[in-house]
Amino acid sequence: MAETTSATTSKGKAKPVAVGATGVELPKFEMPRFEMPKFEIPTAVREFAEKGIAQARENYEKVKTAAEEATDVFEDTYSTATKGCASYGLKVIETTRANSDAAFDLMSDVMNAKSYSEVVELYSAYLRKQFDTFVSQAKDLSEHAQKVATETAEPIKGAFNSALNKAA
Image: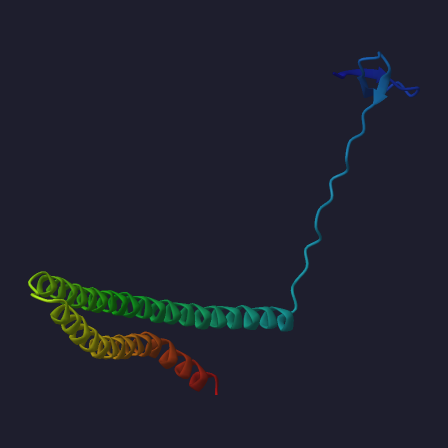
């Protein structure tokens, strides 16, 4: 740690010096103070800067508005997709329940069958009926999935078209 003492110069004036841990005296320098010169900003530069700031604010507002619109579109899309997926899930559950009921009915009929030929007849009728049912169910589920996808994509499509129209 350095100590500050004063030493006398050859002219007899006291000059501050620092004494280090080694006992060697170090001269202490004072930093000159610099002051910024005062100058007037030209009017043209000031106007240019003000126009730049105004343009930046205007662009910020445009970007902010676009971001808010995009957020609204995504919220609508998410909401539509959630509802569509829930309704699709309910359709799948209904389909599974109908298929399970048909299988339990078959088992009940098979348990009450009197002969092997009656069991074969029951299975054949069940398979024919289930094939037709499966085709119908697959068609319904496919149409429902397509409807959900279309409804979900509609807000995005509309927003995209709106953005293209604004840009043009």
